[in-house]
Image (tube, rainbow, N blue to C red; front, side):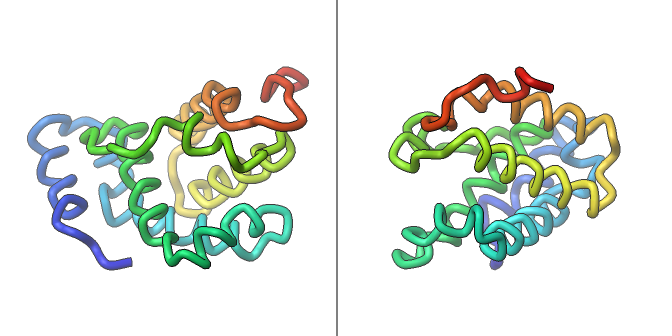
Length: 149
């Protein structure tokens, strides 16, 4: 993925505004971008999740989606908040995301982050965030994400 100017500025802004952030501690933009790249490779290779991305692939919108994901993860990890995409509920309402699909996507993200040696406390925090936003994304086969765990 090529880096646009806004992404390249994230590290400098984080060093200035939030030098102790998890975003910087795990490697900043380069690390988050690498995680996002691998995350989408796995999502597209998984028959249970690939179908959700076919419209994006057909419209050549995957690079835009990856950029949004980088900005969202940067924000979640305490880096600069440059995410300007639609809110999660609006962005996912038309997709019919089931609880099972959401869990699978969440597991892919957490597994990729683990594979990239993200510390356990960060993985646990990201898992908590994924659980908290699930009701905004899951629209079919409803049920509270994590309620049965």
